[in-house]
Image 1 (cartoon, helix red, strand yellow):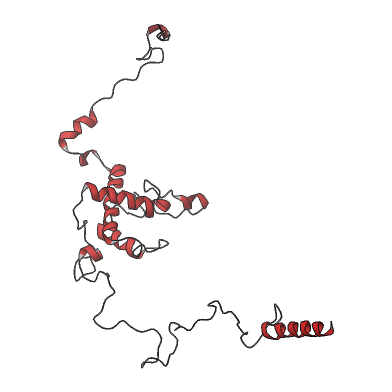
Image 2 (cartoon, rainbow, N blue to C red):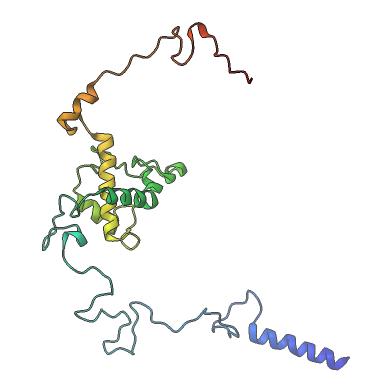
Length: 235
């Protein structure tokens, strides 16, 4: 029995020596029996490192190389700007088709409607929790989003603005332009005037609607006198 107690006590002492008491502060790092990736050999950004000739951890990309699949051409499609300038393009540089609009609506509902709302009025989910600074995409007085060019909106989607985070890594380039095309349709539905309607269709908008029936008049689908139709009896 005493040998058992001796071995048991030595085991407890060994565990305490190796693992240490819970909550005790050590000046030296503890001994990790199972590291579980708590400490990894890695290069920390902006830290000195003798592995490289220049002595720094953060290395620049090799000159003349680009990441696989990374758009590198200075074109309006990739940047939303005019080549060689910092000026935004005025209009979307891709053909606007029904398929593009449908794709834009789908992407808008996935990435944009959560904050800006399904109609773009800035009444998304964050406003229900007291965050009242979501941009109204139809505001042409304060934020003036409708007055912004398509290229500027593309740049905002890509790199973010104010409290809005960048969505460039999440949304493909063509999908960003699709979202812009759909956004313009939403803005047109809110801000359009009669002058925006083709001349041959304006007469349909100004045509008088049928007069509503008076309170005492019988409904069109009921017989006069308010009597209910008699259901057919089975023979």
